[in-house]
Image 1 (cartoon, protein in one colour):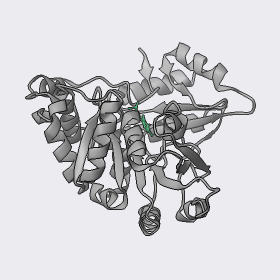
Image 2 (cartoon, protein in one colour):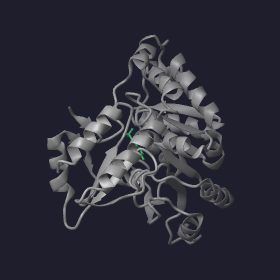
Image 3 (tube, protein in one colour):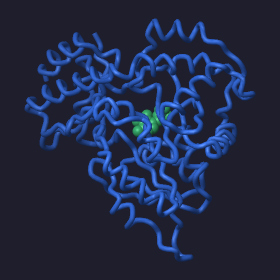
Image 4 (tube, helix red, strand yellow):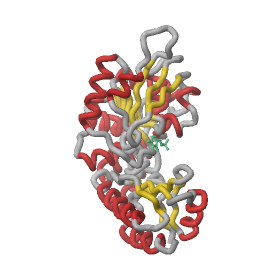
Length: 338
Ligand SMILES: *Cc1c(COP(=O)(O)O)cnc(C)c1O
């Protein structure tokens, strides 16, 4: 039996989700005529108390559309050095938006208002103008860390006063909401744009939604077309997204509980130096002494535990809707064999 913990993107659509997909009314979304895509967009915009939303193929595309829509060529994006938009989007900040990036070092990937304030470029022709602040919540490379509401409020107040747009990479935002009890509408009031992923913990096969005001989404729609993301009968996929939002949000708590168990199991292993704080569905372990992930990931894989190297000494496990209690028991049995 293979225990899949490489990512929460490896889930397969449930039967209920497949049924919803097959029965979805469809149309051509480039014409704005796919009723299911439109329903998803309205649903998400309302959920966040924002004006408009746009369904996209991937979280990367949503983030890149947001950056390109907010920023002018020659400006910079301010973000943490562990950000997905910087590390894992193929240099898109530069290649798509013609923008530079100013990297800050946060606490497990989370920035403070003071750090952001200090990083804003002075009004000086020598400087690269600060055009966007981008946060990530939960923070993937920070082990699924979560922002406190007070910090987000402060950062948001500061960005509004400074007239600098604030974007949220919320690929796993629902994981944070389930843990903290924060509401989507609070995020809608703090951020100028938010991207969410439907194909991570929520278990859709494809899809992300970018949320913002009407003028912003209009711009983003043009960018999406330019990137080749103007799709047609995408309602087939939007139906999966609607189903995921209706059925797979509250159950994220189960993924979090199983991630806690994985963390506790790993903390007792002699070859593990430490487990980063487990806040959501991501568990990152640091190997002991000079042990390397290059040596240990293959060992784990051979046992049937699929996991991802996360730097030379770190390994990541991510729980998800196809990882149940039996898998957890099997995980514990197998990993103790090393
Ligand atoms: C997965 C992820 C994305 C984008 O994912 P896609 O694979 O492009 O859908 C963006 N940000 C974060 C934090 C992610 O984990």
